[in-house]
Length: 209
Image (cartoon, rainbow, N blue to C red; front, side):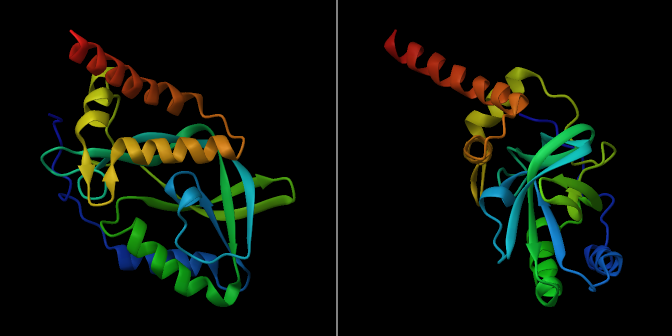
């Protein structure tokens, strides 16, 4: 069983953070959103354009505790966060200016119900020019950040953690599959999913004994 910190000890104001993000956007140009996890395969908003994008200085990491969507308080699961360092390949979505406020509010309900992420406007490189897009990053000082997890812990979480939207394993696999379809090779995620595969092989071997 994971040892989970008291996650609500420093609750932040999600509405205030939304207002700040909207002010930073300004509403004078189309809105860009950077997706690096489930937003890639389930954006849940209408967009007028989607491009492959590369961000420097941040990387995708399955190191954020989930006690609702992909786990429970008794058996926490994991979701992706964007941590500082390295680089990240993902997708940027363009939302027409007139629809930006509505999309941002809808996105906040999905990504920021507990104000865990630190929303940032990051420069994203695409084949058709650079854009500045909103990305949901995670601080290593956040109580929701897992820190380093041992392989056995990932195996246990993949085997046991399930929340209202399904299992951690299904979530990670869906992200990996979509990245592969888009031609994005995430070696770190592939390595983590191999732990779950070895779990399945071991389970089958034990049943055969």
